[in-house]
Image (cartoon, rainbow, N blue to C red):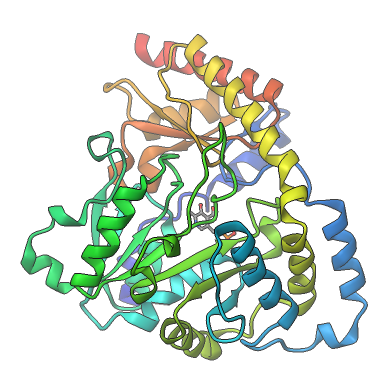
Amino acid sequence: MKPAERLSRLPGYPLAELPARKRQLLAQGVDVIDLGAGDADYPPPAEVVDALRRAAGETALSKYGFQQGNPEFRRAAVEWMRRRFGLTFDPVTEMLPLIGSKEGLSHLPFAVLNPGDLAVVPEPGYQAYLGGTVLSGGTPLLYPLTPRTRYLVELAELDEETLKRVRLVYLNYPNNPTAAVAPREYLERTVELCRRHSIVLAYDNPYCDLTFDGYRAPSIFEIPGAREVAVEFFSLSKSFSMTGWRLGWAAADRSFITALTRVKSYVDTGPWLAVQQAGAYALDHAERLMAPNVAELARRRDAGIAALREAGFTCESPLATMYLWVPLPREIASADFGRLALEEEGVVVMPGSAFGAGGEGFFRIALTVGAERLTEAVRRLGQVLRSARAA
Ligand code: PLP
């Protein structure tokens, strides 16, 4: 079989090969500590599992949901946005249930790009932005996220001619993988620029509730004028440790939601209605259910940062997300570091280059295990650092 040419424009998916190698090592008796995918070890809230159990027994919830989905989920999601951000959205026309936010992020370009239109894709960044852009026939314009701009995408740096061709930009703050957050002033001038150039702003916000030290992550819709340009993506994956359940939603002005709904109605039939029912329960009790997970992540962050410093790494303590973005000495390539960490010390981390060439010089730790295990993993990473330096 000769695959379609568009596939050759996609780089290898970084998390695709890891599980197989991890399984082999585990079978050999290696004590593997997996800090790779952003998938914490703690379970979803027991009450949400119970809600799913009840919903699974309801025949009506085993039927096709189509794009309308479960009205309970639509209600709970917009009510959550009202409580959380003070924003009002119509549950029928201004939100859309997604089979995880990844699905919506990668389908959005099909709704807004014409062939050859540019989409600004941050690099390093979540792979669905690049995937959706390329698969839909758009042209990605990679923007390097580096300490120089505090990991912010500065659209004003693009020349006017380029800006005229940009139809879509992906922003994700709190950010994966860099853990950066976006100041309000940055969001204001970016919304303004998107309005001036009619650029759709895809604001990917799955980490908005994983925040520490009193930091509060905003919705893009808190910024005046954002409703003219933005589509915001939310997920239950990280806040409730429900990654495998595949549930999220998009919120936006009805014109965006109508276009995205049209794309999705040709490719999927929406998330399982029972999962949406349980998701509604999670969102209705979000504040109480999330608190222990956020406290646990803060403990892990503190333990991870302390252990990294002890092991000879430098790393700032992030205000949000479940990631630590750790600089490497210039002479150590991140892919080499990732390989050595796994093969010699049994620790899975994500090399920065796995998120695009712009991520070189860093690796990412996901806070997926408890403080003690994390400290042990980082101690082993210190070993890797010392032997790589000595080599
Ligand atoms: N956006 C970012 C930045 C992510 O890191 C992830 C998952 O890791 C997602 C979106 C996808 O989340 P979901 O599980 O809702 O598809």
